[in-house]
Image 1 (cartoon, rainbow, N blue to C red):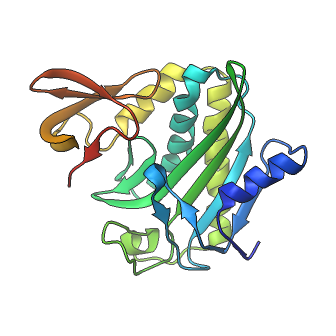
Image 2: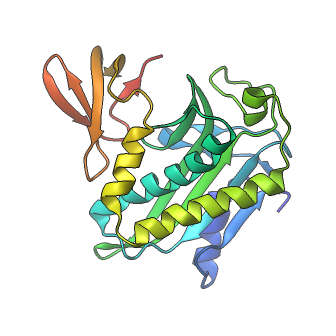
Length: 233
């Protein structure tokens, strides 16, 4: 579609109205009200970037394994980006950074039935050819490499890499996926400042099976949920 408020919202409407096959994609040239983590917005210049949502049916995952889907999708995107240029990392829980700037945002919305995931809407916004941003923390592939990219080519390659990681998830290769995630994790094993009520110095040491962030602090090892800790530049 040419314009929509949010591809995740459009995907949710599709699921509500009809039986949708796994792998259905909603994509737009102009997303006017894109969503990010913590209720943040995702702004994108029309026709310059990729903004789309994939409908998946990861009913092989239990409620406590929800974060494993985040891991697989994030790694699929990283696999593609790091073939263009090394240096991309995943920022917990599911942004992609180059250096200290954000190039991609991911928002996964899960629907649960009983103790299993019934379906998931994977929203992805990847900055590609946009050169100017309202937010100083944003960057694009074009800015990073100095090249202009064909959006169709990027889209096709991106889906292929995400599918490979999703198949790996289906096979139950959770240990391998988690290790790859940690190996490409932003700020992993380094001392930085964080805020959780108050500012503290800490070192990311891992993530739990439920996706909680583990940070070693002066007061010992602490665990944080998605909205409980802020990364300080």
